[in-house]
Length: 353
Image (cartoon, rainbow, N blue to C red):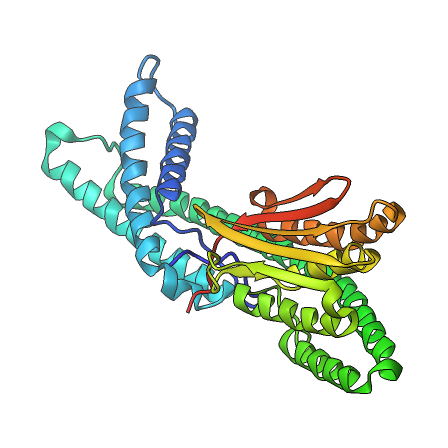
């Protein structure tokens, strides 16, 4: 099952990168090599012996770095549950103990095999130097990871706040138009007005009951279908909607209130302005790891000025897609003298169970 692209819950926070990933291992090796170069430059070496000393230092530092990454890889899930302070303390203690054990093993090996000796310090001094240097490096690394975690968390919270604000702009607009539809039916057809009120209540329960950044495609299409019924009561046979969505995966995630505002635009700025009405076509398909959804409607060539009403909803959806997916999503417009189309393209993902 594809991984979801939902915005992470603001109460969850990742303090450590995934040290099991190849990219993290590569970064670990590069940082370890930079530390080896720094320590070699800081040491008092004989002229012409820099590369030899660097090779010794690189071997030793990598000997410490790679097992440390392996330990964090195995303990990642457990450590994340401890919170920032305990995660820092436990990670520091685990890595420090590991470094001391590896330093002791290294010293014992080099003293038993004299020909391979690369350590010039006494036993206690070698362990003390390893402890001091590793303590500083581990503390700085953990502090950096914590600050990086806090920065990522602030970015996520800011994005969530902006998405909620954008959704708040859509909801009053949607309710205003729905209430206008019901008001227009109150005198002319009270029975239909009652049906519209019931449909509006269903919409409120389905979509406006609580803030949701993402919803399933099935739920989003159900909301749009209920809205279609409300408008059908008002426009009658002038409104026709063709749903060509059999190829769409209904469990896919989509930002909330995406399709309904586009359908609303198609009706208010397209079908309603045509004396004989017309047909809105909602089509969709999955292409690779992307979903393509297109909403097309005929337009009146004599009511061009009303097309400006599309801009608020389209700009809103563009901003929410940019916050949710970055450059992986696209909102495309296609406009001719008698047809207006909006196509949204975004990554396919499902909510994890």
